[in-house]
Image (cartoon, rainbow, N blue to C red; front, side, top):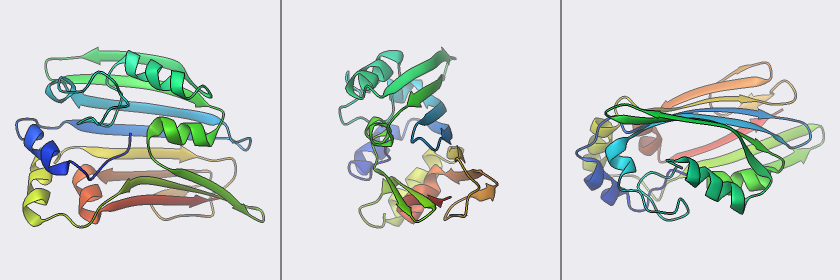
Length: 200
């Protein structure tokens, strides 16, 4: 589910006729055993979903599962990730997906989501780094303007909870064991990187 810079020009061309395509809300509850739960709540423009390839593992316009069979395909590849709940509804413009996943291994969760997640310890300190978006260099002003117009109302929203009180996070606001962070899709591309490190 990684946001990818390659093919961005193709994405913008395909998305010119679409508006408010993608909004994602993510909740993570990570336990001291290394297991946890992940909730995903997002909406996808139906026109954009219509140009997805048959397999979620293919290079797609939207780097997210857009139907239950996509989740089942990924869960079959990474057996320590299981689907606890799934619901889907739609209106004339959007598909709305809500799901909760359970994982036993952070490495399988990383593969399931499609971006690197690194876990390490330093004494009593636990460190989690998520490479959600690694850009390939700054985008030109015209491309950024197109992204601004297409994704003006769309954002990534995170609520992450960890086993102990958080010591630091390079994004978001900390409240005890939880960190909350919102960022607009255009701002992700504008800063050309979203590498998030949390320590507890």
